[in-house]
Image (cartoon, rainbow, N blue to C red; front, top):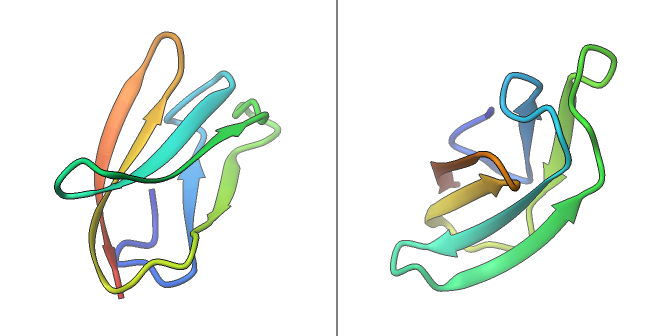
Length: 79
């Protein structure tokens, strides 16, 4: 995941998920801010997915990436 701190978008690279996945952004209290399912398969041909972030105010958020088999939570700093 890069860049972090973020401004307008974040990039998810292929070493995260090799199947369709969903992502959500939460505040530090766990309140869901935004959620989306990506219909992309990350593999050797499609190595990155660019996620345009919704209008977030500056602060710290949690980005959760998940599918039926994997789950990851990354701290994002929005500038």
